[in-house]
Structures are given as C-alpha cells and as structure tokens.
Image 1 (cartoon, helix red, strand yellow):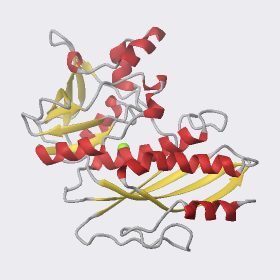
Image 2: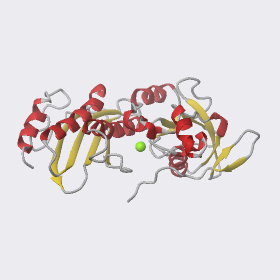
Image 3: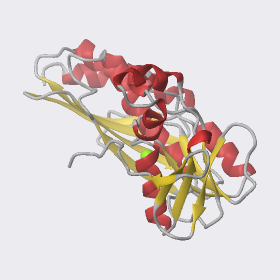
Length: 297
Ligand SMILES: [Mg+2]
C-alpha cells in the first residue's frame, strides 16, 4: 500500500532494541533472545468479532488496544507473562498512515504496561472491513501454565470480578488480569483457568469438557455487574446477563478448596458427573445452558 515503507520506518523508530529483542521489527524477521528456562506459549486472535471492530465503529486506537488486550487476557488465562507480539493489518482501502499509526499506538497502549514488545507484522489494504490479527508470545516465567483440563470433583469455582453488560463499554476498556492470575497461581493450588470472553456459561463449559467433569453454579453467589442491571431493561434478568453476555475478560478458575477469600468470588463447585447446573436459593436446580457468544467459523 502507498506509504507502507514510511509506516515501517516509523514503527522502527518507535522500537529500541532490548535484551529480549536485539533485532526488532523492520528486518525480515525479528530476533528474540528467549530465556532458556521458559516455556513458550503462543496464541493468535483475529478481529473483527461480533461487528465490534467496524471501520466506522470505535476509533482505531481503541480497536488496537482491544485487539492486544484480548491476547493479553489469554496470557492471564494461562498465568504466563506476555513477552512479544506480532500484528497484521488488512486495512479498508483508502485509510491513511494516521489510521495505521493510531492502530499501532493502541496496540502499544495495551502492551507497554506489560513490557510486551511488538516485534513485527505486516500491513496491507483491501476492499473489506478492517481485519487486525495479533499473535502473542508468552513465557511461563517460573509458573507452570494453567490449562482448561485438570478440574477435580470438589474443586471450588471462582471468578475474579462482577459479570454482565460489558457491551455498555467494558468490552473495549477492560484490563487484562495478568498480574492477578500470577498471584493466584503462586498462592493457591489452582487446577484450571480460563478468561471469560464467551460468557460464564460457555467458558465454564469449555473447562468442564476439557476436564471431564460437571459443575454446579450457585445463582446467589454470581457477582452481577452494575452494567448487567442497566442492560436488564431489555427484559432479561441481570443474572442472565452475568451468566451469558461474555467479553467480561475476568478470569474463571478452579482450585482445590478452600481457595482464596479475597480478590475473587466463589461461585460454584465441580462435580464428578458431567452437566452444568445453576442452583437457585432453596435448592432448585436447572441446567445452565451455554448461551454466550459462539464464534462463527
Ligand atoms: Mg481465552
């Protein structure tokens, strides 16, 4: 695309070499000095999703920030440290260099607080909407990566914050729980962890399926965000929004009891038999169907 060379030159000017990245973006490949003791964790995430990254939607800087934060949230889910990222942009034809610089700045807004460097990428333009794809490289940094498999019957199920109604704005502005994930993983015998991108009902389903277990969620214990109360004007109860909305980017984890008494809320228990239930006050149970966001193929 016109001006691509200038853009790459500009990106290079933003990136001093560091110990981890002696050869940053701008050469054919970036070179990373990977610590020998660390496992490498890799993930990739492609926007837009749910139409939320439209060209004429949020500002490019916000879009860049969210795209990076989604990847950082996946690092949190595995309790690893974000180390470096590469990003590719298919920009709507006709956007200028300012738009690309704003996107890049958004990526940096999210990555910089974690010391995560953007070490490479590629840009192009096409007739479609913006597609921004970020690949993240995480390092284990002394903590065994937490997966979705490993929950045992009797484990307690926790979430790290109130849920629901993120569409009112938190889906763009959330803070990935990287530091909290590592604190919890260090202090408690966590058995699984996942970030709540698809909604509690669906993400808990991912954990139960991977672990070969079931779960009971106690309705009265689910922390409901004030945003869920606001969006409940649509007729669905705030609890329904908390269980199914998604894009909260809090963490859900299982832990050998008793588990933490601060920084996270206990919402349920792992059961040996498969199936996920919601238990209401008085003991009435009904199946907790996954109604959260299902990614289109
Ligand atoms: Mg995730």
